[in-house]
Amino acid sequence: MATIQLDRVSKAYEGRGVLQDLSLTVEHGECFTLLGPSGCGKTVLLRLIAGFENPDSGSISIGGEVVAAAFGESLPPDRRDLGVVFQDYAVWPHMTVFQNVSYPLKLAGAKEAELRERTQRAVDLVNLSGLEKRLPSELSGGQQQRVALARALAANPSLMLLDEPLSNLDANLREEMRFEIKELQHKLDITIFYVTHDQEVALAISDRIAIMDDKGIISQIGAPLEIYERPANIFVFSFMGLANFMPLRREGATLFVGEGGQVFSGSAPADGDYVLGFRPSDVILSRPGKEAARPGMVAPGFLRGRIKRASFLGAMIDYQVEIDGVFLRTELESHFALDEGLLFAEGEECSVALHNMHWFTREEAAKEGVRI
Ligand SMILES: Nc1ncnc2c1ncn2[C@@H]1O[C@H](COP(=O)(O)OP(=O)(O)OP(=O)(O)O)[C@@H](O)[C@H]1O
Ligand SMILES: [Mg+2]
Image (tube, rainbow, N blue to C red; front, side, top):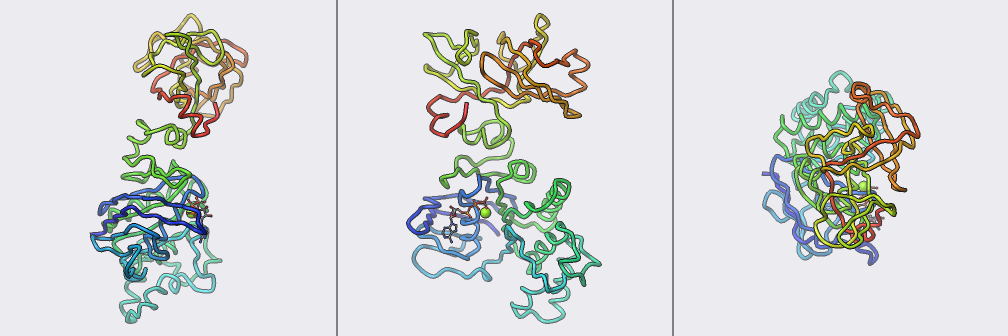
């Protein structure tokens, strides 16, 4: 069983802590994604699991067996039953596809017949059949990426560690490879530990996601929908997609939008000033005088705004709306806007309502450095 268990793992370089007391469990057969901003410690964690580095404290178990602990022997990478694809995927330029994929098996001393069979199987699995004799320079970026994947799969590991394996691909290829990785996971019944800073990839492929902040601390672990809909804090919310932040100022029992005079009629969780977080798709625009309530909307809650900028993006229209000095990104489906008479020109007045809002205190926003 390819489970991973990290128990209070810490790692520092030259006295600077990267990971502190990090604990998490990855179940067998799941695609678990570690998502976080650049430099937060994702690759360091992956290297610890793979066995290229040792933790300063804490322990790491794979399949129930302790493979690394601060004191005591650690199991070398080649005995951890895992395949690794690194961030820069590093296929050897002077070796053909076949030689690249079979190289780890050769190192491990596999017999010729077995080496051939396993290599061919891995090459077939990633849809590179027919290209075995090519050099990497004769392959596209996506194909080179598949070579790296096949190389990691050749030894038939039950655990795959993938470090940002799609970062060098264009958007279409990235999407295609995403599906292929998912398919491999199911077909081979392997556990995948996937590292990325791309929230879209994480949402698309993961059974569960762990969000790491820039201090190397895990803010939340959960299923994609759970993380997106119920972020544990303002960092998670702002990291998971385009976000609007609307400051609310309290005077007595009343909340006002920004520094202006419009009353915000939703009820706050407690006293104090707040910052409301919501996605562009959660802004509901109407024509003044033609406001209509919609499900999930904060009622009555219509604010007066003005269209500052209108960008037609094909399927969507991206309006920038100003409400008393607060600027919001909104998006509307073009067909819907056309049908509902919501094609606004720049400078026109509009009514704004919201749904799916998240309440954050001003202190939390300031602490996380969220620009409002
Ligand atoms: N061998 C090392 N010696 C010193 N510092 C290191 C070493 N490896 C990593 N670091 C530092 O640890 C921190 C985390 O690095 P890491 O490579 O894990 O980031 P990351 O989350 O993978 O970022 P990215 O998304 O850019 O790949 C960085 O500040 C980095 O400079
Ligand atoms: Mg990295």
